Image 1 (tube, one colour):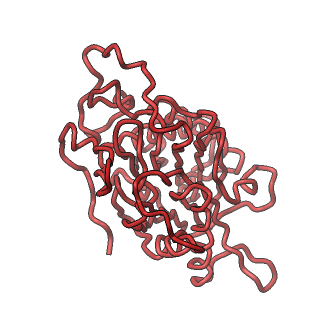
Image 2 (spheres, one colour):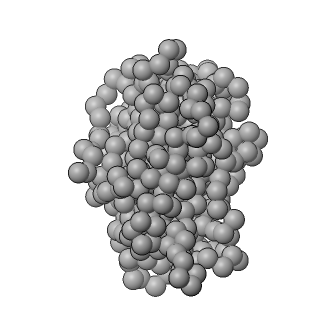
Length: 338
């Protein structure tokens, strides 16, 4: 267990970034098509092909999920990912044609100081293609992939991940790009809202503050309330139906609400996908599904804190400081796979 999304068997993760533009893409690629659904609780999402994830829709399984920067421009990334998957022979079969199924969510990082004057074609198609080619079992957190240009109200945002195992041996994990309008930390201090769910000092081991500062319940909002969105995927190796996956995605939003203040605001696009690889052959029960849903929430809360904890500040004018710039602390990163 590496405390990463890829602790779930049957998937890989690839990141691709453009430092000049200060943005990036994260691709979650399934070795075999996976059952998936989605829950969108933000008021202004930038998404692609999420309608087909509703339980009543025909397509049962997907090939990959894309998380990206770029707001609506970033939705071009799924096209690049589809191209890379098509080159590998992946996709939903329709006669002689194959169509890779790649739902996507994008966050707003257009005002983070990067050079967004990219001309007639956005960079996201190429980034999506490269992210799929980069997919492996290990990947960097923090200022990487879809979290490269992400920010919060007070600190640099980023890409985070975490994992856990149920009492029945089912693996549950999460990956998230944190670009919150509010904050993952309590007041102006180093403590994370997600502290009660932390494991093995994965984001500093500080716990909760001995006394909550008077500013703890203030709502520091960055820039304008349009500059936000947190997007995520929770995964399991259990065998789930689309309806069960949707229930897991809905439950995982509880972790977002625990780890960020505020969340699910009118002009953000908070979106959580849920996917099941089916590698674990255990027959599902309501009790097991409930535990999976609970751990999806817990791992997403932990992943959000790790995203901020592992981030580094951007090399742009007036960049927000990273958590380490302000508070220090060791990294729990793993090297990129080769």
